[in-house]
Image 1 (tube, rainbow, N blue to C red):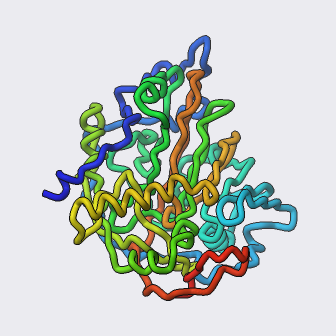
Image 2 (image 1 turned 60 degrees about the vertical axis):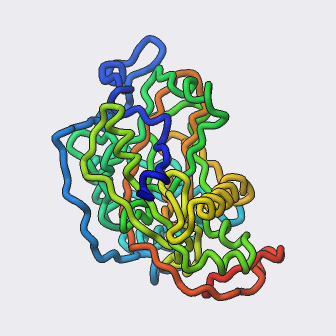
Length: 379
């Protein structure tokens, strides 16, 4: 009964196959060029079915990786931190050429910086099978139950808005923002960890992705509030996602799943604690009455959305690969362009460990900035 009463709405801008014009994408128009990576155009096969996911043993490659990052960042590589706690841009490193040691260091650096944009990458130009092989190093690849995928490659989640699509204006006629904060597929028993997303085509301006640092979001809370959150679990649901797909004439490769996760989780490589709730998939706090749960979740969602001093906004330059750690961020794509440009990205989503919590321990003042914010990462 609780699932029905606490049901949320999946992305209103979700269109599925109904919003897709295959001929337009492959051939283009006078105003819009054809898709530059047709092999990545989405397909939806209603006969494609997969069994429920089974638990697997995850190896976290960031654990024990060399923190000097010499196999990831050569002497000629350039790294720029965009904010003190979240977001970096790297130039001079080619991800497709990394050794195993370099991939381990990538996992660690991503856990530390939360999200990293690697510029001038050849990822999209490699065979799709090679991209899949790269990502598989970091964990079993998640297959989205509803999204379009390149023909024959269900492991690729395609983020696609067709050329000449006007549904953004329709959405904003009734909404003040297109932002939809979420963590990817947190309804799974083992949600994603080190995740890759890369640009295939996009508007000249707009269509950025904004990320929120969930570690810093946790740190900004008072020790009293932090301690109260420990021991609480939240119910996450993928039911609404599957129902939205069916309503749009889409597919369901697997039956919808739900799962309970701790509200505060610990990262296995850094030991940092992070908030682990999001308005897209989190439905309620287990053991609380509806009004209590709604009030607490609203506070956390507002805290995440309004905390612009622990956000970073990444621009999708051509040939960019963004690597982010889904365990320690919320994010949202931004649908803010109105010129009808195509927005086309691919995501590879390795699953990680089941979220776990370590005991609360009141820490010391964070000495890195001297601002009195508590850091209990050692707990």
